[in-house]
Length: 146
Image 1 (cartoon, rainbow, N blue to C red):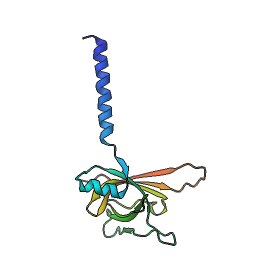
Image 2: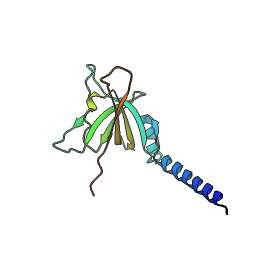
Image 3: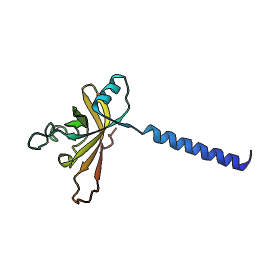
Image 4: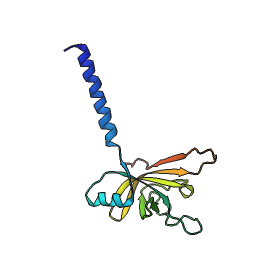
């Protein structure tokens, strides 16, 4: 076999490895209804859900429960997806610092029973500049100690 053929096969193998490795981490953007149906069908695939925190008539965030004295790694909140469905979300990590101020929230995880088990939270916080730039803050659970 010629060296050019071997080199070409190596390039193709590298391309396939890159495509396979990036494809396994990809998840889709859905609403809570689709996430629930996926869970009922037995899928454990992680999905992204975009929404806003539930607020009362005065604009105050409601449905948020975090007691670090009781359990610092348990945070619950209610998220309203883009279709208007309210869902209880459980995040087994500390509450993100700017959670109350976020304009929009993207959660990554899957439905488990009647709750959405969240593994990662992305917050869209209000920008201190009004130039149209969007400021996203990624929050991820700390690695578990085994």
